[in-house]
Image: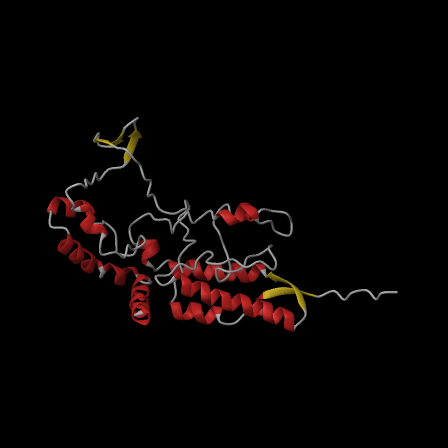
Length: 261
């Protein structure tokens, strides 16, 4: 079953890499919506105005039916204000409430761990990532030697995050193994490697549904830069992470201990 789902998600990822191809999948989404939501007015409010995949897909058989239940009301407008016992939408609709749950998504552009890591020059990683997070293969970045990031920038793909983490761990283990083999104490990513990698990533993303699907999503920062998605195949990602490329790093050998007199 896992291999079957993996195959389906790989095909979906292939479509996401080309906005025109992803747009052709809209009919699948609208057909699914028509089958699960019979009320045409409700269905109208639930129909996206962007290409499938532009925002993160919700893979669920229960979400849409939940919105059709008699004790559920959809207010298709932004929240304007919160009262003592009520909320008011932008169109003036007011609803009495006991509990408010803010399901507003993710802030992946400012990972909390970056506020606890300093580079070798003392700069906080969060300051270096003020514009957008950048990493090489989503795993290492400049000015932070011997540091490995799990599920870092531009590794998002429609597949298992556990699988991605396993592939990354193979890369990290190989890095430690090679450092030990060659007597390396410090591994520091070369700045030109990071720059070339991210330039290639951003160029490839220009053709994807994430960048040109007609929506605003958490994949894009305030400057319109996509710092989250991986624009290539899962197979290529696993290949790139299968072996640590030590030539992309500046290395410092272990210092020999001074002889004891």
